[in-house]
Amino acid sequence: MSDNTGPSGLTAKEAQEFHSLFMAGFIGFTVVAVVAHFLVWMWRPWLPPVEGYSAIEGVNAVMSTLAPIVA
Image (cartoon, rainbow, N blue to C red; front, top):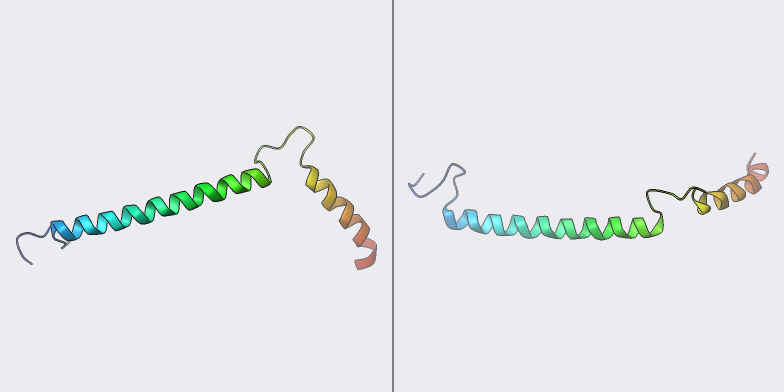
């Protein structure tokens, strides 16, 4: 091990390159996660209105129609 390596065994230039790649990946992952959360929020907000989700009522209607057929 040469004198210019740190505890990780990387030189300062290698550590800077690794850090830049790591940060680029982290920022990319964070952007994808934020976009995904925004799209899910647009589809179905995490805090429903007082009446509840209107889509659930539609699912209940379909299931009550299909239940006699399946059973």
